[in-house]
Image (tube, rainbow, N blue to C red; front, side, top):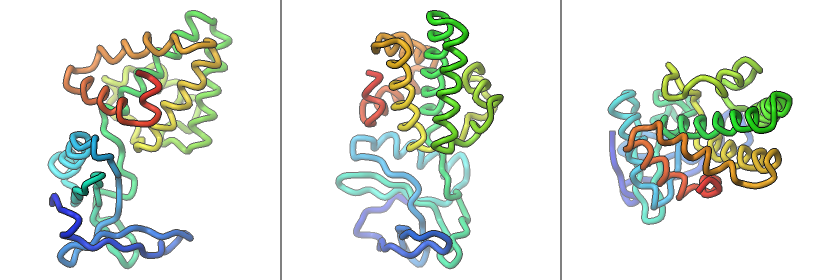
Length: 221
């Protein structure tokens, strides 16, 4: 829709109608937008990629705001009732990032089963389910759903779970912590990262840049 600079817009906080919190709202030429996703200055390519996907492929009404120290994506919203016209309050992360996290998770699960046995694999599955439940991961709220996430090739899934950036950061951190608990060291990381070779070269390069620039992603490099 638009790529804007900070001087082009007005940003203010307004009370959420149903929650005890303030919501940042961007105003531009009589239109209002709600904050959906924030990227660091080093994540310009990822920010532009998600913005293009939302606007060009999904037909969403959103803007990309360029600032000296960050990029942010804002979705059009009705200010009176916060009824999203588009793209909705919960915008998933880049699909390639979600697929990469699932690939890492699946290799870790396979390693636990192959090296430590079925009993430990079941415990790993339970630990992971507890993480999904505690942090309210979409499409991961049952034992069957968790099994699918651990066994179905994410590159062939009809739809990857609509996880947001904060879900992925949590998952990367928790998977690393759980892996160290099971193996006693971080040797599993190199084996897990080899799974990214199954991705296209462009997606793999984008994922590696994302991991380098994200707090929990650096654990896997």
